[in-house]
Image 1 (cartoon, rainbow, N blue to C red):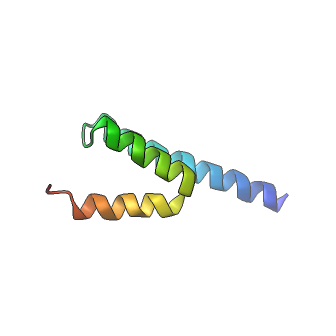
Image 2: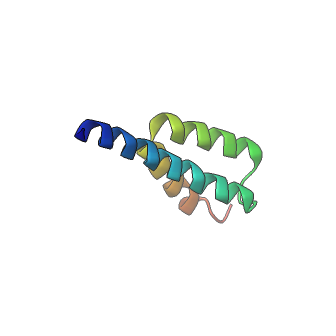
Image 3: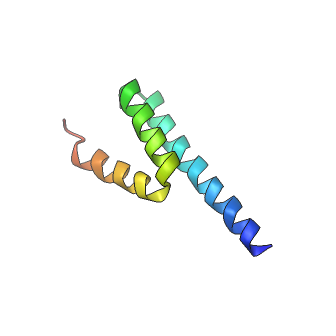
Length: 63
């Protein structure tokens, strides 16, 4: 039972992270190519890709 809840929690976390990236894409903060790359990276790597996305976004915000 606990294992099933853990798996559901991981899936919900990945959905929320992908939703965050989608919202930034809809606000025109990135191109379509960058959106697809980041979405696939977050979907495949989970929190690691999302943390990388956040760190790169803050670092290269002015570019």
